[in-house]
Length: 237
Image (cartoon, rainbow, N blue to C red; front, side, top):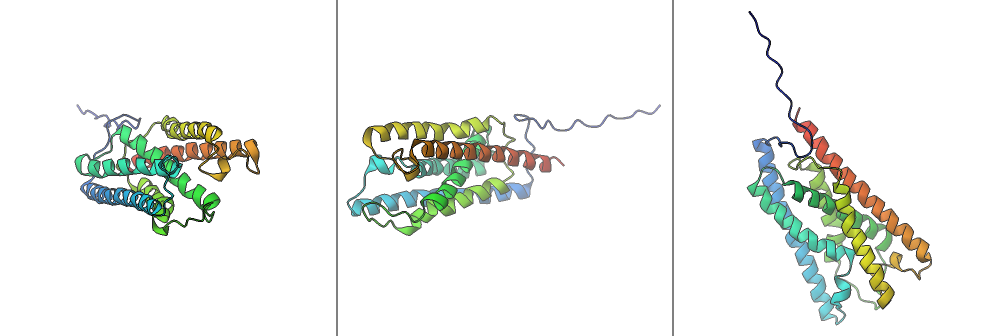
């Protein structure tokens, strides 16, 4: 009597299911990416230290304003997230779901930072005539966003993310906007021209920019989720 063996069950593709173990080659590449993440984190820290030192030397450093910028707050997040990612690359074959969701948020912030700066803010002079050192500015607004985007696109050692990642990604920017607008109403200072309600576009213009950027962040977070799912589909073939 012959028996037919049933096909082996395929790996569960749902988020939270057991993750496939990466190959030895992928693990080596993961460690290289980890080193790059550590280097990138150090470069972000160096950029902030350089900017602060230069502004202090120029006698125009205002910590409550400098650290209120979205770029600077997300840069501080980048330092932590990139450093943790560098360590995880040597300790685990796959990122944890919480870290991956956080890094997906960082991916969205980095791309938005690069797009908004280069389309809306590049070349706008400071009111007091101060000229910032170029390298830290370019690093925070161009090179780090490019690195974070490429790392997310090419690194397959992350778990398959849930769609709820989009909510996590947009939560911090919305809180930042709320605090910024309340502070601006009290002090009259806004970190970016497109947030000034007394500007040429008025309040409707501010609302349009805020909604547009929020939608972009949600779309980028969705793209980050899709990328993890594509990586997993390829890995399971």
